[in-house]
Amino acid sequence: KAGVTQTPRYLIKTRGQQVTLSCSPISGHRSVSWYQQTPGQGLQFLFEYFSETQRNKGNFPGRFSGRQFSNSRSEMNVSTLELGDSALYLCASSRPGGLATSTDTQYFGPGTRLTVL
Amino acid sequence: AQSVTQPDIHITVSEGASLELRCNYSYGATPYLFWYVQSPGQGLQLLLKYFSGDTLVQGIKGFEAEFKRSQSSFNLRKPSVHWSDAAEYFCAVALPAYSGAGSYQLTFGKGTKLSVIP
Image 1: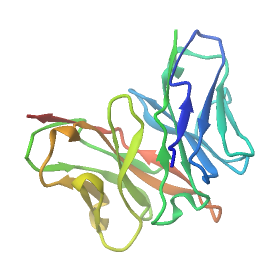
Image 2: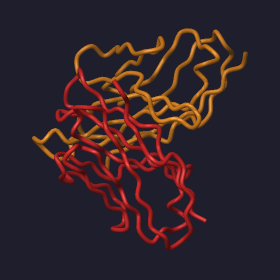
Image 3: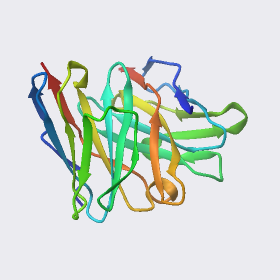
């Protein structure tokens, strides 16, 4: 079956702009998590959505937000972009039990590379 | 706060040599433990995971990892490295973030970049 899809794959924005990234999870997966990857900070958890509700959030400013639709697709938005927001944004999906079962896992998409100029 | 430490930023091995990548975690209880691999420009692929039970875990691509509770470690090993193993490897722990709701978040180490000499 198809993997996690993220669009766009690459994006260039300027400071002060806003951006929306999209993630389509694996069919049947209802949990979607977002991570930011930078050379300095590494991989950091942004937030998780399940059944259109944010149920977990990392330590990021309010400029970072997200939502999930009824078909489990998710978007994340970053407003008032800063240079430090340049990163690879990864989306991961899992079934409702998520990582709680030994038979399941979290599948990652290829990421969206955001460059802020 | 929980943390994951991968002490080696960059490791270079010769093809055919054995490999061990180190990972230590800091947490009051035993979390779920994972190893992921990331090739340039790609997302993360799960190599193996530990939830409970047998402390030696087998994964894909010939990798294995051993959980040692006394050392809070989860080291990744491979007996014979192939040139295609060159990538960045991330150790991660998953902790329940929303009790009873099945919500977990991954906390990653900073990664170990593996280079393989032909």
